[in-house]
Image (tube, rainbow, N blue to C red; front, top):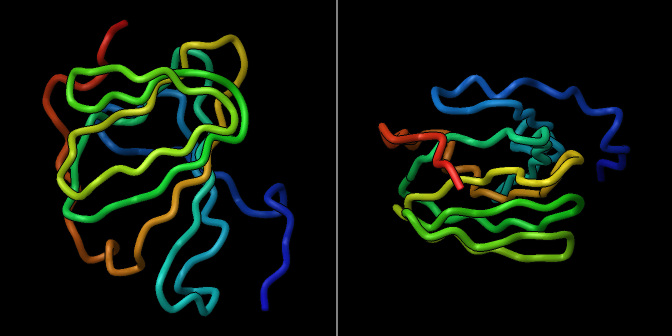
Length: 128
């Protein structure tokens, strides 16, 4: 069993092309003995965003704090604390903070995703 506080997990800058003001903490991963899934916590600064991208695996997202939009292709869906998102395999998506405080969300992915490629869409950084 692993029990830890999120603040005790190192926060790293998301260094993918198209990311701005975005950090990630790997809360649970294969390195912790989790055989199937990884849990990550993202924090997106006001005005920041994840890359606009797609990949061949699903992920599930739970918004903890803040507000913003998740883009499904070119369609923006508003987000706030308590919202749940399923991103299906190969869906173009992006998370963007449109609020004045950090937006935090949990993102669960299969451990098998570590061997899969992520494709950044050239028109990243969608404007509202």
